[in-house]
Length: 364
Image 1 (cartoon, helix red, strand yellow):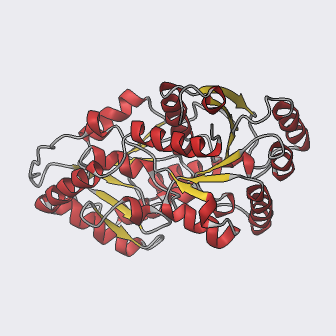
Image 2: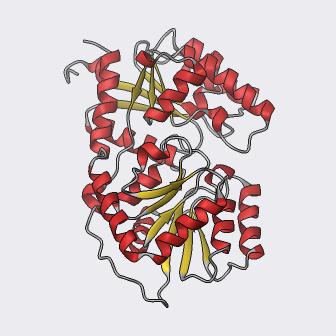
Image 3: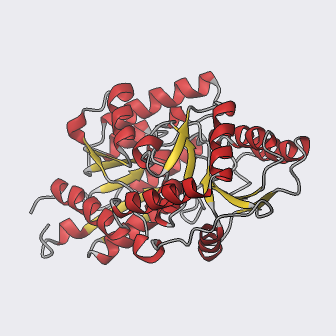
């Protein structure tokens, strides 16, 4: 990329909702935007508002109006949460701009959708992706899904993994063998939505009530009222009120403290397009307990954690029991997590790769 080519340094970045939302997808967007700015890109940020991926017709009309009349030829990145719901807008945009689809995970793969909703999203996203000059996926697993289920040719897909702040967080953890009266501090980080598997986690922990553990759950509680109600009801049902703490969304500094104080990280997601929280947890040297759903096995190697099939509560119970009771095993997983984290990109490296993809679309 030539720094003298002004056109190559301009970029339109389009996103739905609130860019400051505490989710992995928005965190990816924020960090890439910051990194691109530091690399000399002149970004025009355009927010499309709430309601995605099921916008009202008036919102679709407004999105089309917002994206029309912009400087032709400037590459435009549209976050997949919006793009997949805007096939007609994508068709119009692609006539004036190199269109880059940024896909965190396919919309139709979200849990909690009705069959009809999943069908609509699959059709809509498939059509929208047809108009993209390039697709940036956040993991090899997402790239495979886009190819196999949406017909996107692999030569139009680039994978840009999320980064971590390992230079800040990665450090040797002192491994303390807990006595019988010391509780193992488990940490979960994720929005309270059906896909994250919190009911399975509560059911598994309920079978281990005689063991020394506590669980802190940090994540947005407002995205799915039903899932949050199910979580609170489950804590009461299993009698875990004194063991499980639901913190809601927390600040970055608060999250840093939670990671640093935890003994292990657990999140039995049913599916992940990448799983940024697992990568972050490994950068803190935390043993991981997770599932094989989606891209998680690509993110968490066996040396760093125990993975079970999504929804397999008995297997999750056994994994939790082993990690809680076996301090030397936790120490080995912790060392493996740090080794795995050292192989992951930093956010600076992720932004550089993202920039390189954009540069190939806007030759001098």
